[in-house]
Length: 81
Picture 1 (cartoon, rainbow, N blue to C red):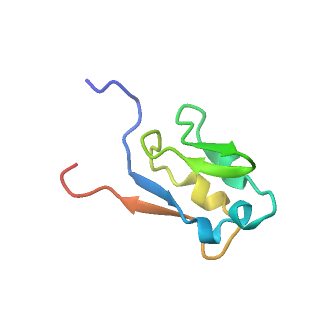
Picture 2: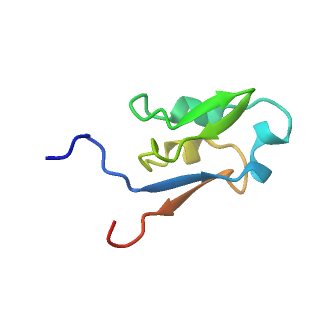
């Protein structure tokens, strides 16, 4: 039986060159979207930092990102694990 109740769908990648917070002004829209049990995104000095080991790949942070193209991208898991 699995130890967690989540099944990773992929890994989110932060593209700093597209992120509002990494370009200067504050944002943090993605932080609020991260499920509380995952806590993959956190703010450090007003900039989002992603812990890929905690990411469940739900994509909620991507939906909340106001940039176009998005500053967060979902990379599917490799075949077979």
